[in-house]
Image 1: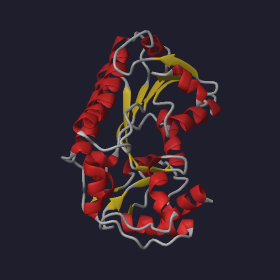
Image 2 (image 1 turned 90 degrees about the vertical axis):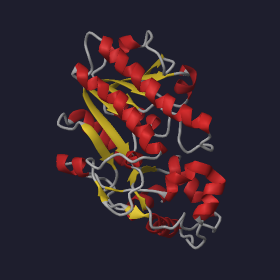
Image 3 (image 1 turned 30 degrees about the vertical axis):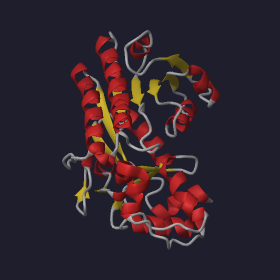
Amino acid sequence: MRILLTGGTGFLGQPLVRRLVQEKHQVIVLTRNPEHARSVGTGQAQVERWDARTVGPWAQRVEESDAVINLAGEPLGVGRWTEARKVRIINSRVEATRAIVSAIKGARKKPRVLINAGGVGYYGHVESEVVTESHPKGADFLANVVARWEEEASVAEAYGVRVVRLRMGIVLEKDGGALKRIRLPFKLFVGGTLGSGRQWLPWIHRDDVLNIILFALEHTELSGPINLVAPEPVTMKEFCKALGKAMRRPSWVPVPPFLLRLALGEMADMVLTGQRAIPSKLEAAGYKFLYPRLDDALRAILS
């Protein structure tokens, strides 16, 4: 396939580009900084400049593409969520997606599918109930971010494009993401449970994320929201215990909620709240996880 990709220089984007090229797909990466994109190893992928806000000459690439994968958006876990940064978090996702859908609307030949990133934050904090894709939207900041992101992507359905909305959990791999930050105190022998430990932590190995994106490209029956989480969710306490075991470090220094809020502000909600999300639509479609169990995923990552 010929695939147009945004967010190709990030924690997910870089390995996804390599994987798509390895699978013999033709990849065009849309980026605000082509020089940086080339320097981080986009390899055989083509690179096209865009501003992630407006339709420009890059829109011609939409007509040439069989699929669009949209991962663009300002990282959530870097810096405090000031009011100005919250605006950037929302706008970076909404404006980029709106530009892509506008280009799809104007294309004479439209892509067959738009795969759009998102998160399980859509559901807000759910204390104990099992969360499938039919669960209602939450009411906090992250829920509103994901909902607005999905609304923009869903507009493409009116133009005959299959839209897959990826509601990702915490993506695990050693070279970035949440795990890189959570590991540090364990390395220093001061690791422990974050918050009460009772909150659910929906997680997924990055290799499964890449496989599921390829799975969604090929399986035309998949559309709408898809929970990208491992089939065995864990609580934060269970996660930290498993991480300590995998690192051969103790998990004995709990971090109370008020300290996390003092240090991180509203961003602390990312680790103090959670959802017992399960991948019901993926399992129904027959996807087989590489890493269904947390212990196996952490062992693979940290070995």
